[in-house]
Length: 448
Image 1: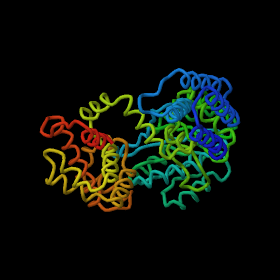
Image 2 (image 1 turned 60 degrees about the vertical axis):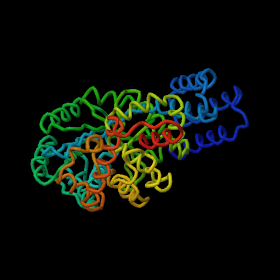
Image 3 (image 1 turned 120 degrees about the horizontal axis):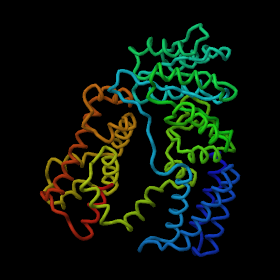
């Protein structure tokens, strides 16, 4: 699905970029190409037609901001409408909190959807984040279910609980009890059925009552296409879901139907399986997913450029007055590194010229940026949004998960505090706001 739909949509992008003029004829061609690509990916006809009308109306009626080429604005419209189709810009991360004694994740789903393999993939994903993860088999019905999970657990080096009993509830409960002292996260691989029967519903409800999971994730095979929405709604009525994992998205011709159908139910798609290897599980983010489908590597730059034109003053105030996070830090450091010698640039900023901040920031290299990115990939959403909570134990976990040293993590946090000081100084007036072209450059850097 990713390859087929991606090929068609990236060809559409090439058509827009190569068009000598962006007129009504081209817009209608683009709309037809989008329709054909989505219908071939099994997206619901009504959804496709509604999306097509919105793209055509916006492309023909909306005027691009001053300074933004029409082709860039048309690409932005197509991008935004596809993101909305797949769930919108807001994404929900996994509810795993390192401050808890243990985090419990319960996987549910019918037979043949890939729950057991997904349990191991999710464990591997969390291991890379620095967590100690345990696996529990709560499927007494499927032949060799326990052996399959045990083999996968051995492959990733995770502790596993299995036992010889026909009581799925006891298997789940005793598994959590056995592993809770040695694991940060416990993943329960529950039993499925050929259909969502009454006995399966009761079993899942009882397991949830006993183990009190922080996440209940439905595992769905993307090859079921538009039926994925019906599956998600039925399971959500049976046991409140916190999210969905779509498997086999790399090979599913109906993957577009599954993605759009699930997104329409309101159940957040948290992960997608993109291959057979245990590392082939990735967080689902509609924005980055659509950018990859379109083949626009610089989509962030395109969006940033048009956004700056549309909301220049408003965006400046939001960043200078708002909370500064580690996510903001990386974008700003990356921007600084691309502008040449940082120390020379900062000499023009009153209050910073030859000071400690300028000297420290001038030491930032591409190699360090890559290391910082790896470190931040090992952090939780809470840590990225609120770095002040990162204590010694979290630093140790982050260092292990990223394959770096605790000193590297501390260095990153020090750069974060330094940049935060800069913004606070600008806000308080200790560093004055600068006008003109240089001021615009500095503001762009400070807000990433």
